[in-house]
Length: 208
Image 1 (tube, rainbow, N blue to C red):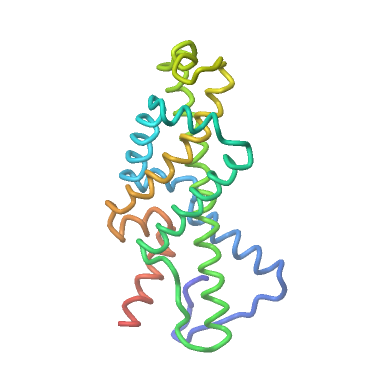
Image 2: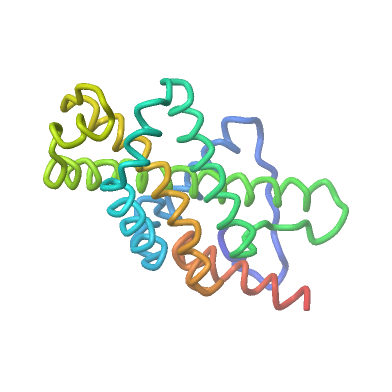
């Protein structure tokens, strides 16, 4: 991963899965997935706005209360998967081999795996942050007695946690729409470390 110290390019084999795993872990940590949300400000604003509006919508209350636990889990997984796929496609983050050699394909698999892991960790962190923010908002603005009248059943504080769970999934999808307002450069800067961003830019120039 380091820049060669001599004019000739140097390649060293990675012996075994453990070595590859350490390299992959280093690449993900270098990309700082915990800073993903800070780099995608438009997506963050869209997600927060979506969550704030959905929290006070009676239709959302009814829908959230009707969902079983496995459906809520499925909604969470689906929302996270969709926004990861959208960021990869919209930001053109998928790395393609330079040639048909096994070494080039192995490098692309390594780079793409690190991208997916970086985005997965970053989006999960964003999801949890959205849950906390939306829960605080729900506890502040919603009245359980008013919700009980709207839903026709007794609503307790625990129901707000379920509502917030569903709203966090909806807000995550809203964040996917927000990424469309970001430039490709902003998406890459948010996803990759400076060294990785420069490497990908250099490869893109070489392919052109």
